[in-house]
Structures are given as C-alpha cells and as structure tokens.
Length: 99
Image (tube, rainbow, N blue to C red; front, side, top):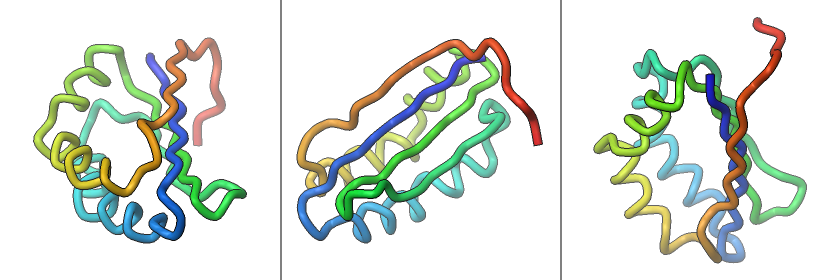
C-alpha cells in the first residue's frame, strides 16, 4: 500500500472553483479506479485550504493514476487557482482500520 496526504492552498476566494474542477475531473476518475482503496477530500480550517487523503493498493497504482488523462487535466485546470504546488506527504501505511 501507499498513502498520500495532500494540502492545497488556493488563491484567496478560489476554493470553490478548485472543488468544482476536482468534481469535474477527479471524482469520476477516482470512483472507477480500482487502485484507490480509500480517498477522503475536504476543506481545511483555513478558508483557502483543501486537503485530501489517498490510499492506493500500491505505489505503482499511485504512479499510474498520476499519469492518467483525468489527473493531468485536473492539474492543468487547477494550477492557476493555487498559490503554490500542493504539499504532498507520501507514506507507507503500517496499519489502518477499514470500513
């Protein structure tokens, strides 16, 4: 397994636009991607912060998704909305409680 924790900081007032882009590109792709074991998406305490937690079956699955047309389209559309590239923490889960 491989997990990612991402924190996006949008330009002031652009969080809703970022979420719309995520819903347009990412939600359908994630919903049909067997490599995703879990995915959590939400807003941070700061009004311009979006956070996501992704759990993949493997590092290969994570890398494959990051090259998918949907992800690349989301990147192209979302970058102008962000103050800087997302902060990404990658880690190897040692234990998790499943649903």
